[in-house]
Length: 188
Image (tube, rainbow, N blue to C red):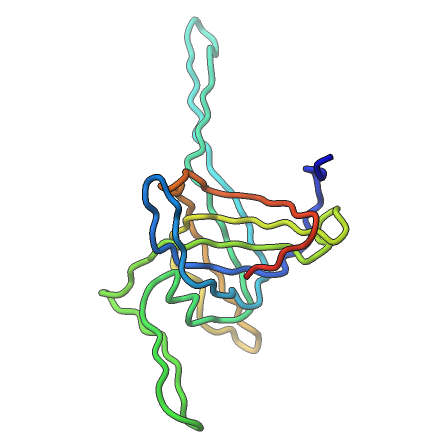
């Protein structure tokens, strides 16, 4: 008997992004190295639909609805220069020697490429109704839809966030996947 397809969804335990490096027709899509989204706090998925109604004879005759967008909003507690490079572009360089090491992310007009990327988030184990199980949300091909929220906060922690729009993969048409696991599977 298959596991239940109905569950609670409690918390987000981990999230990772991966640059999309190839999306050929007929697939498979190819992704780069997984990067941790540090201090993940929220991964909210929403979408837009376009509704068209056919009217005639002084009444409604038919309705057609199309999904026009899937979007994700991510909030995370810690800044990652590697995540910035993966979702916006730019370069990350490490220089110096102890005690004067530096790691810098630089964005220029030429390297602000807004590359496509995959995002996968997971509940902690037991974050679903299945004891020891988990739920994974995967958005297979994302592109930023707004510049990330970055900066400082006066006398408080500054969390970072970004929003991105999903496109279907050319390889297999996937936009979004939800996988409910009987036994929790870590993001690797």
